[in-house]
Image (cartoon, rainbow, N blue to C red; front, side, top):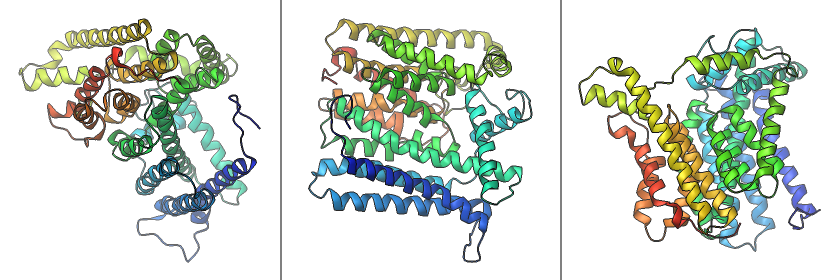
Length: 468
């Protein structure tokens, strides 16, 4: 078997990967099954709802240890750098397993998705029923379908779950998938770092540090957010746009269906001439819509989303929300002693103006690279990192967990300026990604400051030119 680039895939490696995947599935499936049996030799200190999560922490840590041991025995001649590329995703995943086994209570953000899915189940409008669901219909529809699957699997296994138990099972599956997405993010970040010219000795250490000390990643897991889907699908779109445009387009289409942020990636794709990837994005997006709408016969959810999106202004004012709207409202209130309510229209116009200015800045950076000497593949990665970062500056609501999308720009900054401006790069990354979350005006707006610092450090004329 060969890849498109002609690299031989060893049958033993394929078999080993298949066994690893099977072990992971067992590690996911056994905990809820065992918790449902509730044998006398199983106990918990925090109640029955925590049992599956605690057992999952045990089972997945065991599987990770087995994988590491097998790789160690079979690949003993590998260099330290090659070993690091295997162990770093496992170590990052192990840390995520700690967090997921502890975050066993459903957070508010996840409840928004679940309540929307429950609304769909009973034919209600997910945008006005229950909690604050803000997104395109796909996530709620997917959780609704997952709920039906969990019910069917539980009954096939001999259980008769109550509705709340079914939704507890959905949350468990959701969190297990989150762990897989953390490992995938580590793998894709390693790939991005290598393509940007970071050598194999330093790339694993870099990615490990960035992900282990990544506050937006922590907050994503704590709040049950879907940013890991966005980050992974966006990176797949950028990394595969030239070689496998169909997969890249499908990844981007699904990402946009989950949240609207990644639509900005169409700009760098167009600038790099990845028209096939764009065409596949449009086709895949349309294909999902066809399935969502019962083959174009039922547009109810999309019409409800359009009405919500048209009528509801984000208008967040929490200090940790690093949007211009939040900064403007709180500056008026705390510094100028003015009433934000009296200036609501002016604030919204200013926020819209800032968003347009950020979009123009993004287009300008893409245009400079287009006229410059950077190679097409490297230019796409840099432009894509820019686009994801600028989506945070364009949006009217930017919570700390959204800054997971700034990870690619941090890697670009290290690749580009890590040698000549290490302190500046480290400081900008610390402000954007590493600093813990807190609410203290005006210091809580540090993420925006760090992000702008990264953008200034990665001025287009300095983008590296390694071939990809």
